[in-house]
Amino acid sequence: MKALITGIDGQDGSFLAEFLLEKGYEVHGMIRRGVNPMVNIKHVEDKVILHYGDMATENQLSLLLHTLKPDEIYNLAGQSDVAASFEIPEYTGDVTGLGVARLLEAIRSFSPASKLYQASSSEMFGNSTPPQSESTPFRARSPYSAAKIYAHNMVVCYRESYGLFACCGILFNHESERRGFKFVTRKISHAVARIHLGKQKVLELGNMNSKRDWGYAPDYVRAMWMMLQQGKPDDYVVGTGVAHSVTDFVQVAFDYIERDWTRYVKSNTDKYIRPSDVNYLAADPSKANDILKWEPSVSFEELVKIMVDYDIKKECQ
Image 1 (tube, rainbow, N blue to C red):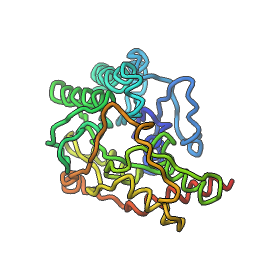
Image 2: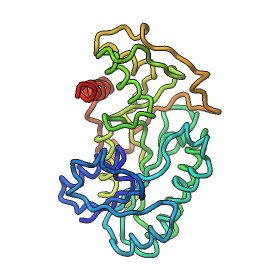
Image 3: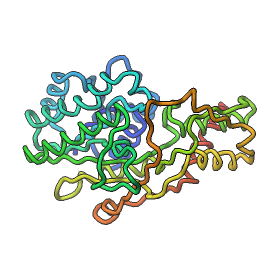
Image 4: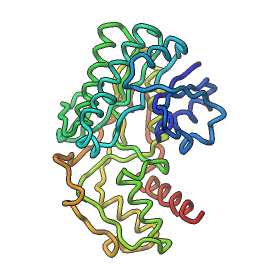
């Protein structure tokens, strides 16, 4: 089996590459020129085949699909920073939204037998009432979520219009030790590690009341693969079904190093304010549980400890 992963150098892409390699796949990855992909995939660099490409350029996608004709395609590329999408809405729409339309056209024209996994996002639900399922209305609250909704709808359109085997995974927040520092979970775990080692005194955060359904990223790439092994394509919500606040994440992290978080954390919502935000996301993963037989293997508390342990170890090197 041959798989192509766009965004292979990101958190999800690197875990997915490991997962597919263990299953005996020939793994290809698409990266943009000028990007150093070795941070997350350095340990499998000699086991994957990398190609230059860009979701903003249709010709590159077409050439890659025409050449490879992969059995499975996992589209994990895109501008994924919600806050940054307010600063660069046009770029976010072009890469995260229109980029999927370009990919779908390339598949339809040059590799129609390929199975596609599209990374949709729980951010698409906005402030729809939780728990959110496949039938919950989408309500964009950022340029990022608007672009993801467009991409999601295009996948459904091409699936129904051209018979492509194309699935959308509406994944809720999934974190790991490979998460970028711009994400609040890694910001917390990294700061906690530094405070534990006496390298930092204060952690400054924005809205600490926001609730998210947090899981461990390797569990979620397993769900991606499971979607493409079904007899017919469909869309699935993937999450733990339990939401925690940013405060909960902070408390578990500081409890782990036996510190009182209230002595170190300051909330500065003025500094980290967004034009609009999402308050409460919690998955209803019943469909994925029933059909895919998918269940998370790592609890919220275990996830936080994994991230803190990793950052303590890194800070000690």
